[in-house]
Image (cartoon, rainbow, N blue to C red; front, side, top):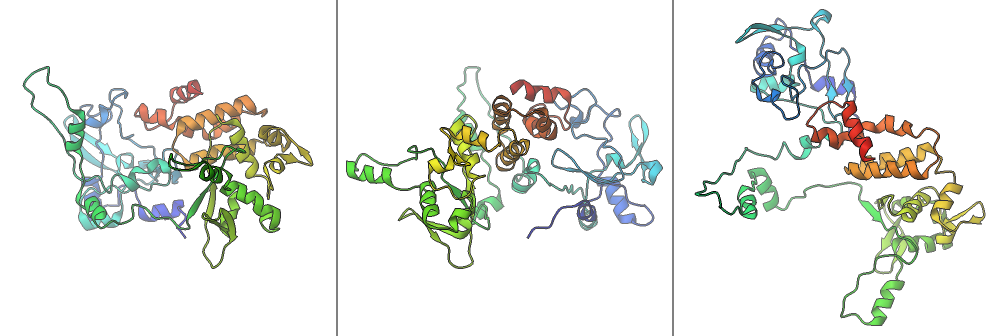
Amino acid sequence: MGVRVTADTVEQVIRAEIPDKDKEPRLYETVTRCMIHGPCKGFDESQLCCQVKSKKPGQCGKGFPKTCRNKLLFGNNGYPEYVRRSIGEGGNSFQIKLKDGPVTVDNTWVVPYNPYLCLKYNAHVNVECSNSIKAIAYVTKYVNKGADKILFTKTSGENEVVNEVKNYQEARYVNSNEATWKIFKFDIHRSFPPVLMLDLHLEGENMVFFNERMTDEQVTQKTEKDTQLTAFFKLCQKDAFAATLYYHQLPFHYTYNLQGSVWEERSGRSYSLGRIRAVTTKTVELFYMRLLLTHKKGPKSYEDLRTIDGVMYETNREAVKALGLLTDEATWKETIMDIINHTNDRKQLRETYASMLVFSDLEDQSGIWEEVKDYFSSDYLHIANLTDYNDEIYLDALDDI
């Protein structure tokens, strides 16, 4: 079980303040020498962090100086806003000499650090708490990126043909630990418990693989073979316990026999988690069928899935509407959060929201926007190379919607 990240646990590991010179002299010396950014804004606009594209002149691309605060706050960009007390509230400061004269540096200029690592290495060691998928670079990129590398070629004339494929291959960089990992064939990632992706398809529209060497009889047998979904329907017809489960709960209690295309009762202590394959709102009936499967237990057929209170509806959308899900803001919010948690495709997220505006009859359609507008707009924030959201970023996302 993982440790729940709270303000207290973060504060035990990461600081963003200047230490007390008398109580922690060694740490004070390291932090003031190695863990101070700039100062740059308003003092030295020639620094690279103030020359970021799309920034105003003199504005720091790293977001310094930071805002003073007395309590840690988990921000919207994947990183916490650490405790940084102002001088008037007990925060420490010191003076640094720049070309224009001495400047007082306070906690707003401190790069987050871990006291133990600073004392051990007496060097710049930036430590961050990545508490969101937005900070995935700290998990997958920074620890493996190795040394910087640049590729350049000296050409003799203006009409030189550029071989982009060759340039890319020559610039490919594999550092020592990545190479070792691949040589020993270690797992790139591992997950427990295993997750089983469940089939989702409309009646008669399941995927069938065949080749030109197969006979007509073999192809017919493949088309008549049950899928995970149709096998689930048949299981619910004869198994009373299975009829009490949602489709995605099935792998926890049953295993799918691929050879016989049937669900069998699970033995032993092992288990799997079930996840129904995600679909976009462009495939309307399939989208609403997925919604029905997550809200109706033990359907025995496609027709039974569309039957609500004894009435069988012609389409999945009509059945969803009869269940009251189209007007349920919580369900739409659940759908939006499901996309946020399982994909990084912000365009798909905005398409789902647009479909919600068209097909639902919510009284307060803007409520979901206000709650998760940062997720709707995060790719535009990245394109603009900004660290904080503003009205222009939100308007770009709304324009796309």
